[in-house]
Length: 182
Image (tube, rainbow, N blue to C red; front, side):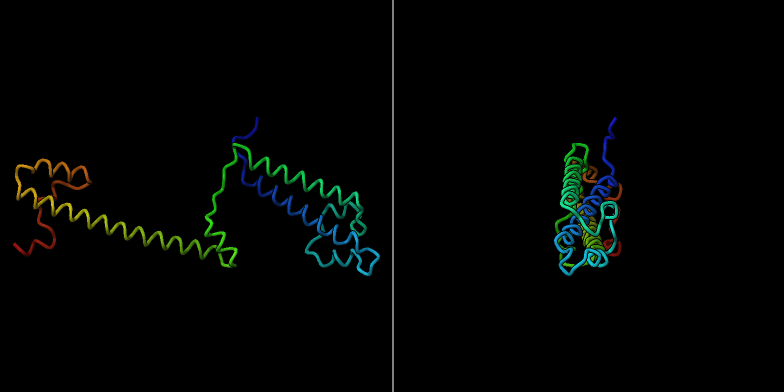
């Protein structure tokens, strides 16, 4: 029975395999035509970060046409497998904001983008909280004034206050700024 969701590690492993295949193909292609022309494959391999397992299995210093074909076929199989995994209906799409991609492309640290995003969200939340409190205060003052000026709509005013999240009991208490005025 197949798993419902493909684990993120599966994608990472497949991408690592593809990168490894591309690396092997690059090293083999670079050294394929240069053997015997003053540049040895050994020099090419010494300049690389690590030696791949496929190269050590298949005579790394003299790659043949067959080995290049084998590496190309392995790369094709890896890409096909990754495409099939990513296209499956159980694959969860990962959404990365385009702004973050542009940030990284520009050579900037994605942690800075995250920090700026969080600060912007916090600022927006504080602004919304202030607006909500201001409208709530306005609602209560308006309701109190309407209830005192138009006693016949007092029930409707209390219903509106209740439905909009206000407390009817606080309606008839003097507001903080009004306590000293009376």
